[in-house]
Each structure stands twice: as C-alpha cells, then as structure tokens.
Length: 293
Ligand SMILES: Nc1ncnc2c1ncn2[C@@H]1O[C@H](COP(=O)(O)OP(=O)(O)OP(=O)(O)O)[C@@H](O)[C@H]1O
Ligand SMILES: [Mg+2]
Image (cartoon, rainbow, N blue to C red; front, side, top):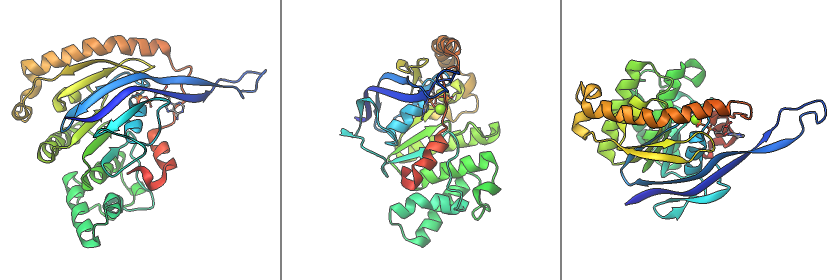
C-alpha cells in the first residue's frame, strides 16, 4: 500500500543574481531545484535518497513535510494531498533545528504537548527517548550547552517521541561520530521494525543507505529528478549481524549505487556553485516557528 506519493514535483526558487555595476545586484532569477520528481513509498518502507550536494534532496523532504509548496505537481499521504505540516510526520532537519529557549527535555516534549499528553507522561516519554539517544543526564541542558552531535540526538529524540506514522530524516547522523552513528543506525532499524513506521531518509553515505534501506533512490544533479531506484536485498536479520558490511549482497549494492551516483556527482561539480544561494534547513525551520511538527 502506498503511503507517500510524489507526482511530477517541480520546485523553483527565486535567487539574487550576482550584481554588477549596472544593476547593483537588484535583479533576480529563478533556479529550478526539482525538475519533476516522481516517487512512491510504501507503508512501512524504509526508503533513502542519495544524490550530489545541491540536487534538491532537502527541498524534496521539506515538501513532503508540508513546509513549502511545489510549483507543480502534488504530494499525497494516504491518498490525501499534503497541504501543510502535520503530526503524522516527524522531521529531523539536516541542521539540528532545536528551540533555543527550551531545554533538551523541553524540546523532546514539544510534539507531545501538541498531542495533548499529560505532563507526567510527557516527561516519562521524553526521558525514555533521550536515554535511547544516549542523553540521560542532559535533560535540563539548553541547546547552547550541547555539542553539535548532542543537539542532533535531541532532534532525533524529539521526532521519535511523538510517534508519527512517517519519519522524514535529512542526514540525521551526519554530525555524529562514527561509533554513535552506528549505534543510532541500529537503534533506528530496531524502532522501525517495532513500530512499522514509513521512513524517508536522506544521506550522503552510500554505506548508510545500504545498511538501512529497503530501497535507495538516486537523485540526479540539479534539477533533481529520480534517476533510479535500487532494491537492497538484505533481510532484517542479516542487518544485525556483525559482518553484514562485508557480505556479498552489501558490497554489490554499494558498488551498484556508487556506479549510478558518480556520474551525477561529476555533473553537479560541473554545474558549480555559481547560482547557488543556500538557505539552511534550520533557518527555514526557525522561520516556520513551532509549526513544523
Ligand atoms: N530557500 C531557497 N532559496 C533559494 N535557493 C534555494 C533555497 N533552498 C534551496 N535552494 C537551492 O536549491 C538547490 C537544492 O537545495 P537543497 O538544499 O535541496 O539541496 P540538497 O540536495 O539537500 O544538498 P545537500 O546535500 O548539500 O544538503 C540548491 O541549489 C540550493 O542552493
Ligand atoms: Mg540537504
């Protein structure tokens, strides 16, 4: 059964062009970030997107999250068009978007408040998820008192705590050290198995994509479209074995993905950074205020 469906999604951004003495930089032009994305994700599926930097992965995730609207096309969840954010979707942004005025536990409690869960229960659930991401004892710290990796772990705990049907995760483990990253990858697999969530996961790591996913979608250089989707033939049980990364299936999948991806990485380098004006996901999240859940 299809959980998320994207139909011909196009997204354009207005960007300032580099000014010169004649126009003082006041002209603007448009940048086509997504050029017609078609993608269906099944209920309970773990699907990752890999693609070169700047190809539109975060843009796509924001659209599924209902934080922005496409210029063309539609996104459906359970057959209904997405018209904005909702408690059915938990988002972990590429750069930890915590509320700076709330402590770690206050941040994790946020989605639970929107679900009208009583204070005592909220604290219990928030503590459980902070402990899951290895942050017991840091409940009362404010974001400025936490390291980058710790902030990202609070953001992950926050997205998990209110138990959304869908998790949208934008390079959630990118800022973590490799040991913590591996622990949380396994933890995420376990949670996914237990809760049957649908997960849309973005990563730069082919290894991570193979380890976690049922299927991996490769996005082209900008304007991003889905170039291929690769099935990962690893059973759940095999993923928890210590030597999974050296198994034939794992190595073959990694090789296949890299073969498809490297052409796009080269293209993206050729497009260069001339036209890019990057607004980070966390800035967008802050601009959305607390409405993002
Ligand atoms: N709000 C915005 N205004 C203008 N341009 C934007 C905006 N957001 C993104 N872009 C541009 O759209 C393109 C896609 O950006 P996006 O952040 O989706 O890329 P990405 O695939 O997530 O890259 P990365 O892997 O580096 O995170 C980039 O060229 C970026 O500069
Ligand atoms: Mg991104």
